[in-house]
Amino acid sequence: MTSPSKVASTSALAALVLVTVWLFLPTTLGGSMTYVATHGTSMEPDFHAGDLALLSPADGYDVGDVVAYRSETLDTVVMHRIVSVDAAGFVTQGDNNDWLDEDRPAEEEILGRLFVRIPHGGQVIGAVSSPGVLFSLAGGMLVLLGGLHDPRGRRTAGWLRRRRAGARSARGPARHAHARTRSGFATSTRGRARQVAVGAAGIALVAAVACGVLLALPPTATETRTVDVTQRSDFSYSGTAETGTTYPTGAVETGDTVWNRLVEDLTVTAATSVSGPDLAGVTGTVRLDVLVAAQDGWSAVLSSGPVAAFEGGTASAAVAVDTDAALDLLRRHQEETGSSGGGGTLTVTPVSETTGTVHGRPFTATPPAGLVFALDDAALRPLGTEAADLSPSTATPVEIEEVGPRSLQLLGLSVPIGTARKTAGAALLLSLVALGAGAWVSRTGRGDVSDRFLVRHADRILPVTSFQPGATVIDVSDAESLHRVAERFDTVVLHHAGEEEDTFAVRDVDATYRFVVPVAGDRRRGRPPVPAAQPAESTTVVDGRLRGLWGQVA
Image (tube, rainbow, N blue to C red; front, side, top):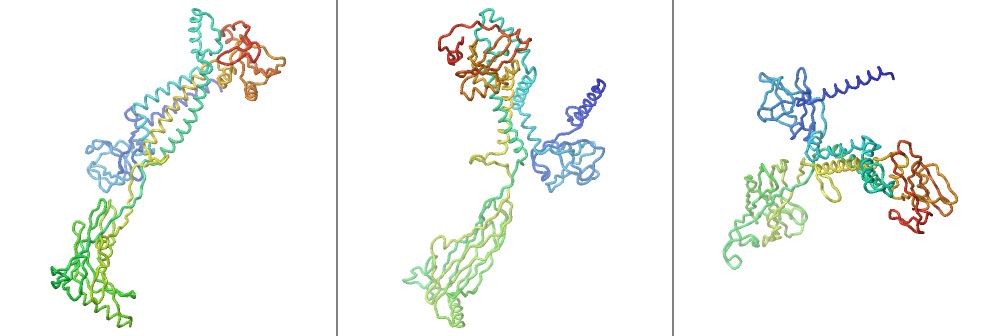
């Protein structure tokens, strides 16, 4: 490509970037785009809390447009839909509201019409704009820029080399100067930094995927739970009886046996109540029916009491029980069917039509069971006198749908999605910072084949000032092949930093495997002189490792 072509392409790209920036530049910075982070539920289901809306000005606005304006009533920016126009201005309403907005914005007061919606964009901006995240991002960017700039570390290395040269002139020559790179970081340190960078990259990838998934999930979830609406009837009965041994007070009380010859005016009463969480609007009626049943399964309604209305969730109904009429009805059935004589049952049953709402959901309550007596010619006996028999109740299940913050189940714990997003974002941020720092430390150096090999396999490198090769020397084709040889023999790689070349070697019993990397001329001048080889004992320690096993090492 010729120079004029390059200039034209660069100019076109710059113009495209400028136009894009201008189009999306917010009004606070002199642009025309209005950014609105949604709150509340007034625009559901199209918008949810935490979404980001971009609105741009238009030449005109019509019914159906989603617009934003500054509300004088609420003293904030409102984004709703235009539903009509009157003399005062545009009439707006939230899609999820059943009322109209009080404000009537004029055309010049509208900030813009909906251009694009970004799900959860408001939450991302809110999280990123927090001071802690901003400082962390700034630090991470500085580290990354430091790692990207001057990747071979020439300027930094030169400064450190000049500084160390002045220090060496005062202290004398360093014996193992080659153990430290020209950047000032030891090879082992750079190797560990590389491992940190690789681990941080893996964590960053996982955290980025987690952030994407968590941001894609809606912040709220609809949960269905079941609540019970309980209707209970507390039964009691009373009557007038002949005073005597059986009824000393002349009255029948709840729980007593009703002897037909002695009792008159028997009345059964049921106090019925409805209970439940967040109960409202309970209405309805209740009455008591007297039901007679035979042992063969036949039953019939003997009588019904007056209807009582619910007030405040309670109602009290009563019915008179005529035992003689009940026995007469039972005998007539037995005579008609030719069945053998015997007793039956008499049940006082509540019949109700009760409705209301619980947590805003409508319900129709189920009436409880009745009070059961055994009926025969002699008496009317309650079949149970326990609390459950005298106060039966029924539960009507009502399914409640509630919209609340979404939670995630993690290792048996319920974690709110907001907490999960912040945790994933913090993990991503910290891993990026660690990745940038590790990459910068591990890449600061010469950057040639020798340097990369030293950093990648620092845990297996043994620096030496000199060594004596064996009788057989085998030159391998590349450094990684030499590393595989060291792994197979489970031994270290000897490294000698010469003035003109870096030599890596692996000693076996009869052979020496070697890989030589020439040093470029512009770097050879900065390499410190190699100390003269010194005679060593059969076993000498260098950098914490035994080296007498490879021959003459000083």
